[in-house]
Length: 159
Image (cartoon, rainbow, N blue to C red; front, top):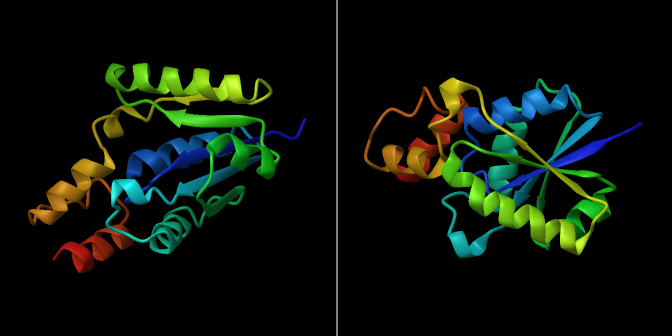
């Protein structure tokens, strides 16, 4: 069976935790689509195009991953992609309640699409893009949390 999973997120920026989940998922699915959400209401630091390009740089070695931006209802994007699975990351118990609610709503919108939760490796469980942005904006070293290209781009954007 040819199974495609969609891993959606804002990825502002893509972190080592995101990359860990994507690399592991790439071993479970025939194809993983990293769906970078436009998310204008979140006021991302990087433009949609910049986030897509950073994800492509970080994930270049993973051959069965496709990175694309989207600005629509996630379930519609998944349907249009021909995917069967929505992949979501859970760092902590606090993430679960919101993600569980989203999964239920997505199942209501299309019962043929399954949601699968993955946790990052332990060394990445505390990393979030918002913390990375905050540390970078205050001049802290984010190199343990993101790819070197992301460090460089954060430095350009945030000083």
